[in-house]
Length: 347
Image (cartoon, rainbow, N blue to C red; front, side):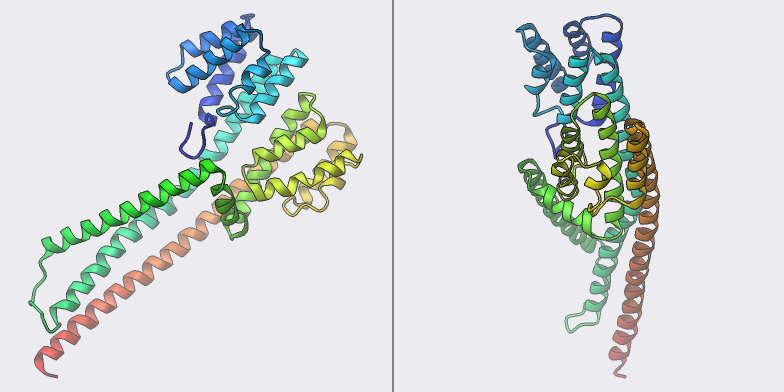
């Protein structure tokens, strides 16, 4: 469970699905499988969740009902695929597909974090070095003021700088806490979604990753035998972006009227021509499940490329900003120094 959500993370769901699939495929009843996996899990919350599901099964509930009772912690997508696997007698297949899905999702998250690490380090360095340098320039100005002491007490300045950073850390912690509270209330997703969906170059990355998750989810849900409008509704929720989700859900009534997916997504703001063409091929060939998986792979590759481009843009912008800041500090330092010296000489 993360700070921004009560749901189990993809990192924990991958081994969970793999272990359940292996146990069930080996002929161990699902109730016993839940117990075995729970006993070997170190995470207390996941362990309690699995045991609660096992208890519900023991009381006569179906697996879908047991999972639904834990909807606060389990994604709806996970619950629906379990229900489909249980109804169709393909629970082991669904569990393995879920593991593959969460592995792909985890790969997306790790790739994004890896590519964004360097720009984040640059921002941090710019903040700490920039604030230190600007503060030092201010002290140099004071050396030549009407109450000038003629020297800088470097230790006093370092203490002052540390107090400033302490205050900044408190402000950051308050903002972070507010964002967590708003996220738990469901408000923050609209704020962060607006930033990530409409501001360049983040928008391109957000849209492509969201569509990669959408098509991957659609592929699994269609393969599980779920009704197509329900597939779209569930897969749209997986995008984790309220604006993209709302746009994709506009296709549901069109599909319910008997139109094709290509027609349903014709007016989508976020689906590009290549994705629509691949959807058309999938519908015409009768291989929609396979085609959707390929669309997901294509969108993921596009998203990875977009992240690399965004990283380069951020690196250049941050480098330019740092250069301007350093230039300002250097120029201010020498102008202040020589200006003060000339004033002192009466020039």
